[in-house]
Image (cartoon, rainbow, N blue to C red; front, side, top):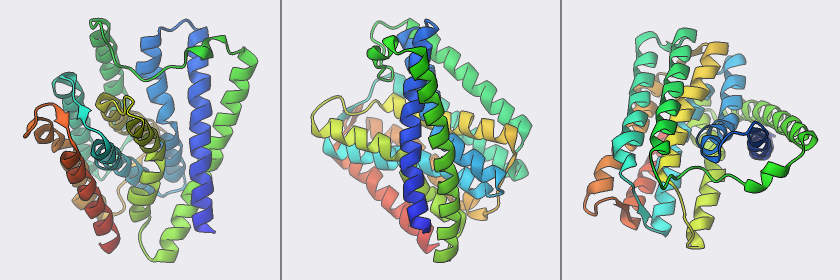
Amino acid sequence: MSVIFILIGLVLLVVGGEFLVRSSVALSFKLNLSRMVIGLTVVSFATSAPELLVSLQAALQGFSDISLGNVIGSNIANIALVLGVTAIITPLGIDRDFYRFNWPVMMIFSIVLYFFLKSGGNISRLEGAALLIGIAIYLILLITRSRKKKNIVVEEVDESLQTVSVFKIVVWLLIGGAALYGGSELLVTGAVDLATAMGVSERVISVTMIAVGTSVPELAASVMAALKKEKALSLGNLIGSNIFNIASVLGITAIIQPIFVKSPEILSNDIFWMLGVAFILIPLAFLPTRLEMGWYKGAILFLGYCIFVSLAFLG
């Protein structure tokens, strides 16, 4: 039953996330927000909702390892799995903003997370507030920089949502909220039961199965686009997703319920994988082919992810 709970939970999270994104974008159009602001802020927050609900639900139920493992594992999967598989299928170009702005910000948030966890063994409410202030500053800088550019790359925003009625927006919000709540409840329950049945910790299930599950929409969309030879993936959007996972998901969760480190492996293993996978993007971006992510670089990332998952279960 635990596997069924996990699968149903993941489906509900995907469905709920989609309804929340659509309703949020439609509501933003009603409030006359620009397409750029919607893409850079509203869509980014809405797409982090599944991770937020899972982390919050786990923290409230006393399973902090699932809260942390979900975010850390998702950040590893976004780069090593999603980027790796997509790059294997089709080469990806890397713009200069990657190493001038997005990558440094991601590393700063990742290192700050490490020190928060290392210093007190938890993310306190004050530290959660600091993360939210950090994401606010990041968004202000992001919008300011984007306004200075002629060709800005933002999340795809469906223009047809401008004509959606207020009634439909409310219905979508209710469906999205209910699906996200139900999905997170089932996913956390299933993960705890599965971990008990397999004789592993909740942390192992969260950094592997749950993390992959919450990354499936990005992976599926990127792979389909790559196979169709369309614009496969924005590296900036993936980096942005990792930043939002740390700052908004863990920040909001910690303010509501402080997050404690229960498994020592999170600090001795998982977070170093997250930092390492993020750091390796710089040498991969420049060596040997400058500002291109080819199939062999994707293979390195994917192989690294396979090793990470194998060690998580073997450990």
